[in-house]
Amino acid sequence: MTPHNPFILADGKKPTCMEMLQVIIDGEANDEQQEYFKNHMDRCLPCFKSYDLDMAIKRLLKSKCCGGEAPVDLMEQIKTQINQITPS
Amino acid sequence: MEEIVTRQNYSDKEKNEIFDSEFMPHINSMYNFGFRLTLDRDDAKDLVQDTYLKAYRFIESFQRGTNAKAWLFRILKNSFINDYRKKTKEPSKVDYQEVETYYNSEDVNRQITPDLRVESLKDMIGDEISNALNSLDVDFRTVIILCDLEGFKYEEMAKILDIPIGTVRSRLHRARNLLKEKLSEYAKSMGYKNTEL
Ligand SMILES: [Zn+2]
Image (cartoon, rainbow over all chains, first blue to last red):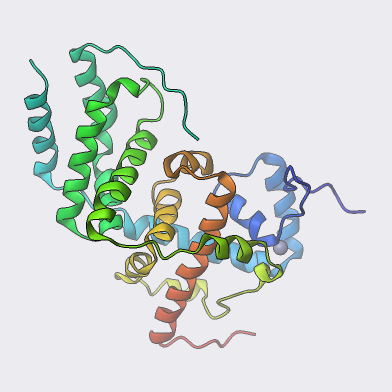
């Protein structure tokens, strides 16, 4: 007996492994979906492997691609321009 | 997908309060978004400046306490498409029809990059991941920025990009596969062999 798949969409289409994995990776899964996927991953090697890889890439992106700070004078320039357009 | 916008009535003092306390704290994320879109620091600066001026001008369509970051990102994205992209005439190369077909096809479970492993990522301590991201077509780059760098939810992304959630999902899926292909090229050039299996 197959347990109910909580990932099934409104149109009744059965989701693929990759579709389920994406929902999990992006933190969009509800409790029921997380539980279901945990069990699924124990039995599905592609999901098991992809999970670690996808999480690692996500972490790497976060740590390597968003450290940049805006130039120090940018905020001041914006404020100056706004003061010019608003009657104070 | 246009929402009904209730216009607020803010005093000048309130406007400045909102601007300083709700808009300004996002300036670093906004600048990073602008830079990742234009791949140019000066253009990013112009884009962010332009976005904040527009945000101030249209502040009455912003409802206090709602998601200011998503609101600002949407303005920046629109400015990029309407002003910047038009100016530089960079055409969109993404064939969305193809994307949808791809996503719905049977071979979606096919492992595209069997040689990319977690271990090989550990050696990407330089600009590899950043370069890989920047090499993607701007529409694919955008969904990764919004989701993985900025942590927006699918629903927020759909609003920022004015596309259905299904398209957010499929574009994200395709974008990640393209990114993995790039990363696996780097991994190969760094001397990793597919020794597994
Ligand atoms: Zn699976």
